[in-house]
Image (cartoon, rainbow, N blue to C red; front, side, top):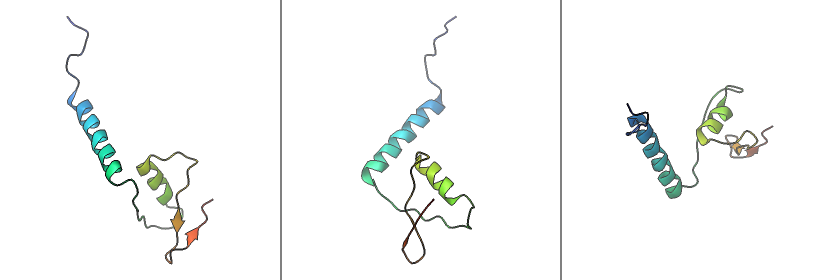
Length: 73
């Protein structure tokens, strides 16, 4: 009886492939814009931070509909 795992599960290789695809995409397109629309205090910034894997202290640049930067507290 062997305790070592000879072949990793298929899920692990899929995750590695996805990470490689994301790395390639970020090299091709290091900067992009995202539009998230919703009511006030509905979690738009939280979704954005989760999608971008941003640190809690990082704040996104937010603009109103006229394109003016909005101060995020």
